[in-house]
Image 1 (spheres, rainbow, N blue to C red):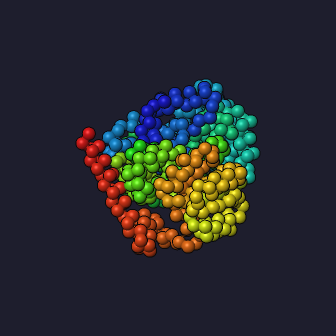
Image 2: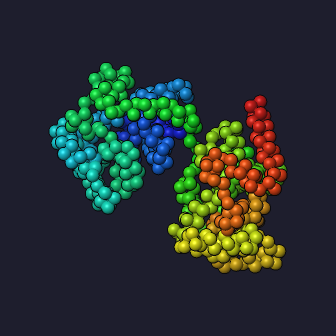
Image 3: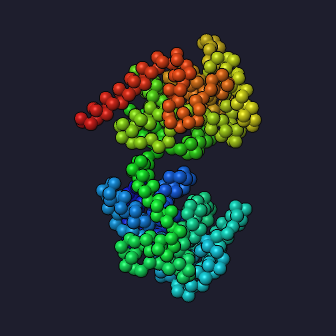
Length: 488
């Protein structure tokens, strides 16, 4: 495969038409499922609005450059040249020629029944060497989908085209690719309409100039909103990191850059593995403590999953290079873990806070998640003798997820020193029990979105003013490290 370039975090294969055809031929020869996607500015915009689509684009096997805007953005903003623009309809037609030459079996999915019927007739007439192994229109429900997948499997197709529009076609393929067992499948949007003659393409000269979008606008002025979306695409390119990375190094700490759904998939795998994992939700105050405490820093560096909890961590990482795209407050991640535990039947245990607070927190949580199995709870105030009893209680309860609320640093150390309990997920939750108990209220939603929840809590609890010093110390260490790195 050709080298991949990235535009606004979306990978694009830097290849020309011949190389794209060779790649598909290799996919078919492999007999393992692969997927192709046309990448253009409109699809990048949709991906930034739809996390599920963005994941599909990141994992697709062949992302060919369909839009002139992608070439332009790569050259202007990244100073990287993409070899060639490959329109979806052109690749579709060339692949039909290749299938004809190789005698491949073809499955066509999508469009209206009458349009699809015309496409099947044209394909059989123009490309007698290929085999139309099956076809189905794009009008089916979720209930129909398993039967459709079974039909595709029975067709034993080598190559498959899906014309259902984006992102529907990409999501269908991503969700069913392995089950359909088709070596190469690709979304083709309105290509069936072009092949059937319903849509007329721009003259070849207009296509070569990259002005096909303008030609289509002249014929169909209703496309104006799509054209006016180009400034939004530029804004996305300017705001987004060039390449998405799953983990970002921050002072030797591997901070996850995944969204909540991906994190929950990882957490689910942790529980299924049955081996102990430490999860840390890191904010600037905790990082400042780690800078002063070598033991705590080493523990965080060895954690199995570190989630960016505070806006300070996002700022700090940006100062040193990579941009964290997904900040997930610890209380929200912990709540999502409880929802996962309820769904999967996992057993949870609460440890920390004052006796009345943890009890109220457990009670409120069970009311909110009635199917959740709370295996037990205990306050964070205990001596060595009582600690031994707590450990035996946790071991006897076969806990899957342990939530420890003892304050940043102390809770991670306690978890680390007792990792021989082999709890699949142990996570420090700070003051989360206080909020779950109902005794402490979170900041209003608009404050949370601006990343100034720490300021709200300072106003509500002036006693937290001493923590402000940690924030300034954190900022000083980040800026000093940045200055040192720039000199070297």
